[in-house]
Length: 307
Ligand SMILES: NC(=O)CC[C@H](N)C(=O)O
View 1 (cartoon, rainbow, N blue to C red):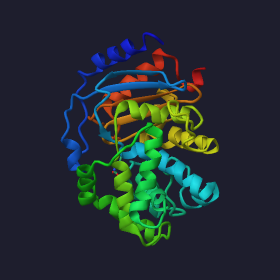
View 2: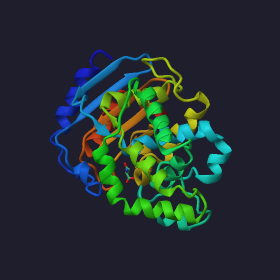
View 3: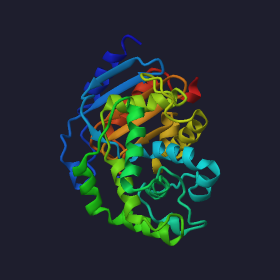
View 4: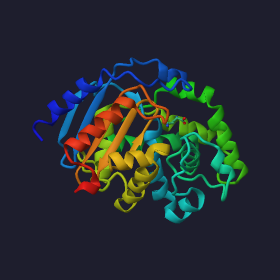
């Protein structure tokens, strides 16, 4: 693995010239970013770090937060309750789709799409909204290995323009999946999406899942080991939304993307991978990050089905 730092640098140099994609302008603040930013990081279960490019640059987690909040809700409510409210099937639709809520059980298809994630955030309860957020921030701090904060400008920007997510939340309330605290739960969801991480932090988060829930640097059990397979299997089947099949076929790893341009992938038992670059494709995945992780996985033979 000594050469991994230079291989990551080579990938950055190779794919930095790729300029397709766009920033997620439906959250206006996400467009205020340098399009050239690009970072890669790998953290092994033993805590070895490999990184290249702009790995200190901070971005908001966006949907990369979803599997982790789901893990938190599983610890709080157990599998049976969570499955009664949110399914475990890929939807085959876009991440922000509302149509499938109208069909069948009215449960969101899975916790990786917005409808499922908004429902999951509503189940993180405490005495008041601040306490709910404090618990969420504490959990993400434990995954990162240090304190993390919210980007208030991104939060405000999403809150002001969240007409689609607000519609989803009201439909969830209509079908009695969530309770009356619609705005509070949406605020919590927007805040979790606005938590600031850098690419190395994100690789630690992925490595914690690769390591059975134990953060490789702090050695703290951040999530109960029994729930890690729930998170990873849903990342595998649903984490990349309507291109989850393509990703599973070409990369073969559980993964999750965020519209800020971040992407994390987990090699169970071995290591976590993270990438960041702000230009995203139609499905909401960072174009450069997908290409670089694909090549990294192929080069290092990390596809779980190829071992
Ligand atoms: N795919 C994403 O990263 C979406 C997250 C974003 N906050 C939203 O709800 O639309």
